[in-house]
Amino acid sequence: MEKKQVKASLFDKLPLLDKNRAAKFIIYGIIIAMLFGLMLMISRSIDVNAGQWEALANQENELNYWNGLYGYNDFIERQEEIDRITFWMAYQDVIFMNIARVGVNVGLVFVLIGFLSFAVNDKIDENTRKISLIIAGLVLFIIMFTTLFSSISVSVG
Amino acid sequence: MEKKIKILVLISIILIILGPVLGLLLNKVILVDQSFVISDTSNSDIQNATAIEVSLSKGQKIVIEFSVSTENVSATLKILGKGTYDEEDVPSNPPGPITGKNLIYSQFAFGQTPASQTASATSRSITNEGYWYIEFAGDVTGDYLISVPGDYVVIVYGSNTGGTNVYFDLIVKIDGPGEIVGMLLTLVGIGMLVAILVIGTMGYLKKTGRGLL
Image (cartoon, rainbow over all chains, first blue to last red; front, top):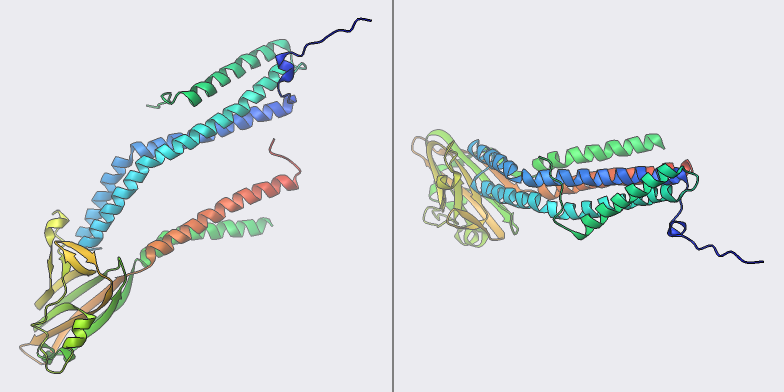
């Protein structure tokens, strides 16, 4: 009797998650990406508004001095402290932007695995699997671009 | 268990709120806050002058609020190094000729740039009525304090042309541990809150037999 050789397709080699687990992956992935995205937006907002805060803090510092709450040396100390905080408000964006970038990509990897699992699940109808595969491809495209190119950014105006 | 978590969350929130409040309160520690009556012989004998000893560590400074509001009274405040004071602290030695350490004082003129309202000096005098807000850290360069750790003595002496007593008010405040205490309390509060959140979530998932994925 002739033996039939069945060649494993690329789909068969992909990690296979059941439907429920794949859905959980997608939901958790989206939540993770959203949370890190939110962190990025807050961090960016703090950076952009650092100058505004500095102006307000300096005015308050002068008012406190004029009201006699503290003397000239305390005024100078506070002024230096305001400068330090302003620099940190600007610099924290660098730290949190990189953390957020990693976090968003980790979240997107979860989403990618979830959609790929949908795509390779033969218990799901053909059209849903095709759409899932296309979405997975798009997610991968985004991951690759945001990882390899630093100039891509989202701006909310 | 739930009650315990609620109590811990409450404690951490209290710590977060208490941090800045306590930090502000302990920012300056009041060493002296009282009205003084000294003899007008203090003008000719340093041993009759008011002497308050303060010890400054690196980066620490004192704030002195010195005021007089009595007719015929003239009072002078100087800050001497402990060594100089001990050397000069002999009977019938007038404190007037002794050169005090450099200090800075502030004048709170609303709307004017603070830098132009302060100047260094070695003493501050008031006749009849007046008020000086003085800052001292050991030495100065221009209008800025230089921190010179060590022991110092704040002396006040004066005269009264219509009597024998010299009246004045003095508040001496020293930099306290407010900043560190405030930051520590806030950090402990935030740390507790994060730990409760993480441990609580893990405990809940373990109890219900659910994994994250």
